[in-house]
Amino acid sequence: MTRTGSWWLPDFSKEAKCYDRLLDRGDHTLLLATGLMGEAGSVLSELKKEKRESDAYPVYRNRMHEEIGDFLWYFVRICDVVAPEIIADLPSKLTESDEAKVPPLNLFLEFGASVGDLLRALSERQETDVPVTPLLQSVWRLLQNVAAVANVDLSLAAQNNGLKTASRWPTEMNYVELFDKESEEEEQLPRRLQIEFKERAWGSRKFIILRCNGINLGDRLTDNIEDPDGYRYHDIFHFANAVYLGWSPVIRALLKCKRKSISKKDEGQDGARAMILEEAVAAIIFSRAKQLSFFDAIDHVDYDLLKTVREFIEGFEVDVVPLWQWERSILNGFKVFRLLRENAGGHVTLDLTNRTLSYDP
Image 1 (cartoon, rainbow, N blue to C red):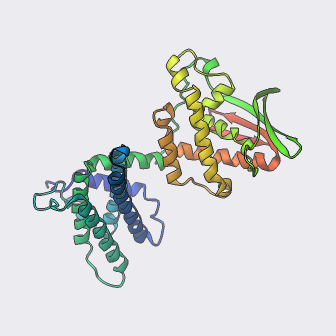
Image 2: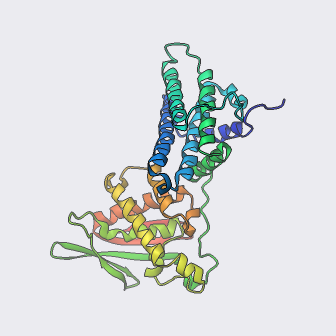
Image 3: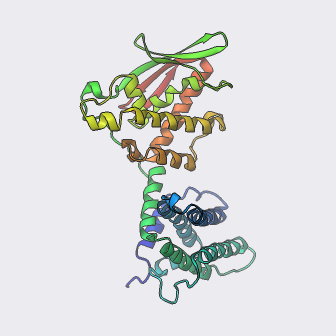
């Protein structure tokens, strides 16, 4: 049988189901509906930003691609749950009669209203036999129109969403190879290393000294804030990055193992700008972590924070590292941070071969 629908949509639907983290929830459909409305709001928000900022908002098209891709994920999941038979038959292209004849802003608002109608029908399904298939078809038609106005390729948006989702929740967790695996030993991050975090005090002012094999490393670190919060131990996050990402310009500088023999690596990946970037990422994550008791009793990092990190490191070698590795670095880094802070120091062992970071008092 010749398929008359969007040939890529059924495949995307199957892929989306593999990454559905809401499946074990009793309110699964309503959670998907809530997510759909949230993503519809993000699509409308991007249009508003583009209208407000105009040429000062160059990321509009990339952001719109991402938001529409996220909307597509929720859309196909809802279709698969409440009306799986329609997925293969949704039209891949707009016909002339389906093309919107209204201004772009009106079109986007109509799109939002259609999503609202769908949500209302889904919420009332238990009490009334509300047909949802026509509403899903209407949302799809309006989404196609919105994508056309925003110059977004729906199949590409779906593809990018799949890559992003796999980066966050992979079916198989295989670490990206260490970036310096081809470098000479003296220009590699040490594959195994023990670092001592020794806490000292001048009066009420506490600071940290890093030591390795009886030798001091770097400068003495304080919290650099009026209300002490333990940031003096923040180098542990750089060590965690080295272990779980295979990347840390700060640690390369600290241990004097920059890739000097490769000028592009030395300047572009191990230089001052990369070090400043890593420090900025550590500070941003730390700020969020303070609100969450430094990830105590929390087993995941929220997706928005991981996406923020991804935006920061774009263009550097570490941008190929999937989000799940970043999550592992953050969670394990803060696990050791809490122990260091609680015990006023200790010994930390890095094993880059086995990707482990361990603590001893």
